[in-house]
Length: 408
Image: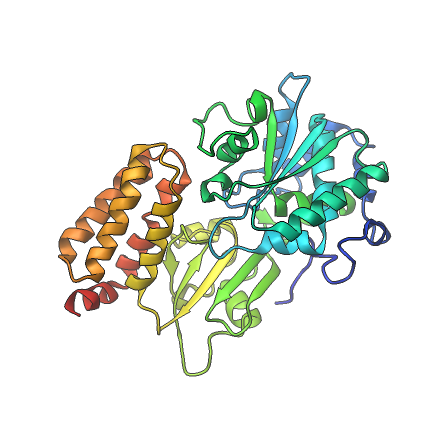
């Protein structure tokens, strides 16, 4: 299996600070082409033939989201890029921005044309200071060249909160308030930023749009898995020999990624667990290595494609110790808005800690399972809904690691 670079087509080939380099590589031609196409027809094409789905984690149909905002009668609409990238183990959006910031901006401008928005916001993780500088320069250069055509592109540094990666929380933070999630519906496409229709997409999603417009939705739809076509970026880390970001067609398998590009784990060791999708997701084992890297295939084995993070762990890791770190992370990052998350994440962390300290294993496991049932159904946003997932998954797949801690 070879790497297929669509989103990362310019990575390493152009100077990311040079708009001239981007233009020479065909940059902004897709935007020009888009403006010759009827807005609704272009949205329908992205929704239909390309079947582009969001690359941020939820996998919502991109064209359907754009269509929702397009259909709302409003004089003011917004386009927002979620570049907060706070999911542990995920660094593919940073890779896109650091190598090719203009492809993101061009994708956003195409969306702005489609829904008739006059202002765009890129909400960037606050720690990504270099990305913020690159995007601000790129936005200014695009405006100077006339590509923005009256659309204002703003670059905003994030508030340093994991939960701001959730779209309604991001919008609340963008408005200047403390980052807390909103009740849905109404969805952002109806009432988003400042209560106006707003499209919120991930960096990878917007960065893919110019290529789809340039080469055609049928071309894009012919690549990868039929129901999740195109390519996907994966942040590969952990105990593999080769770490980094890899872009593969969505019909590639996990084995292609972990062994083919990652080189497998170091000599004399074996894969124990793979966490797919980020820190809030569960684990799978090497038995699932031949699973294709698309939403449906991952769902079929009880896993999640998520943000594309792939963390590989060898047999030297104790999973009880590992999930202690994730449970602490979610307790720390809870915004505290809803009590199931505010209290549940703390109780989860305490239960894992008690197991590690030799506490009653059966009692703590029963509590963790109960917390998972309650939080997955009643928490306000995905942070609380998924906080127990890695712990429950580790308990199911590696019970001996928890028993060993009790006996120690």
